[in-house]
Length: 182
Image (cartoon, rainbow, N blue to C red; front, side):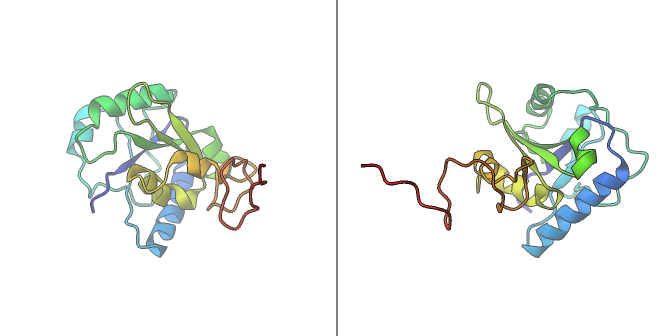
């Protein structure tokens, strides 16, 4: 497997059964399109652990009910600094990650975050459970970008496969043609 592990950080208390459901849906969708599982539920702030992860360290369901996140209360900037400092040069992706937060408990969506370099804007989009593995990998390998996914979100702001009615300034194939300007 050539892709990096895509880390998942829980910034709130997320029940293990919800994380298990998300991983199950994500991997079922990934297998349907021949994409390998790549998600890693990060359960420690131990920096040595990040360096020891290999591509085989993928998190598979079920998630242990005893799992408690040490990242509760952290912000996106804290996560970005943590990854840049400790994940660069490891099997863990340092620029693309997923966040489980309060909304995750409501609808099983995760926030996909991308931060390429210091000074660049942080981009994010909320993904439905079945798309968290495939779309995170697509963003990590630059097959798509967060802005494109954000242009395809549903009314509630969640990407569910690109069928949504989100506000898009980009014309889409099969959509209405832009008005001709004279």
